[in-house]
Image (cartoon, rainbow, N blue to C red):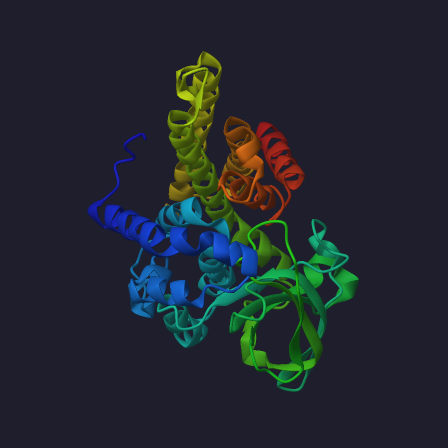
Length: 384
């Protein structure tokens, strides 16, 4: 692995996350994948280790790091189980809108408990008829006196039902299209806010994915983040911050699969020798390792760019998510191939890495949407 010149604190975060992965996540990953049980016991360990606050300012109870530090932890956790890792990192996705658009009062109210891991957060954008087309949202928020009344359904929400703090995009003025969307904080337990079915998924099965149902849900006007009409912009800026984290998840999945493939290739014997001695296998492993390292470099660079406060980071965030997730799918598929027939069996870890990898090409904007973002960004840049 390339030396990325981590600070002493960043090394500590990485090493602590690696220790939790080896001691707590790996031993239970297969069982959580099978049972779909939410990993509360591991969330508590992460909280006790102060890792939930790595990206949150110290004055709100965090460690004062940023997206890069979150990526370091997410990558390590994902080597052990991407489903457990996303329970951790999805809380940051729910917190980013508060960090970006919250008032000081809102930040003081919500961020300390998120930083301590006392309450998980979640982000609610996707709907049954509005996935990639975020401008087609149907959930509404109508202002009535000192409240907004929310009605609608959010769908495929990570940490849904288990999180206690939700940042929700809803339409305050449908006549304005995307410019009529606004952003709200909704707390679990608010009357009129309930949860639908828990989805039965291909991968990341340890995480909860549920519907959020709003039925005349009254939210105090103080829970509006930013101004009315800023919801779509808020969502896009949130994804600019969060997409390197999906890239980090993909890097972790790919690295975990690669590590298992290398280990297996040294153990598996055919024709009286380890398959690691075959040139065909060596070339596969070489390509896998090179692509994983290239992904890591792109993810780290984009995360550092976000933390540096650079403008127009969306293209590079999209590149990091796009490339790393495509690599994760390829590397995990190759890992299954190296395992051969055993790779197809749940007794071995390779098939789980492949199932978990697929979602990284889909959520927080499909990879086709990432290509749109990158292409449009290049065209706009060339027009200047």
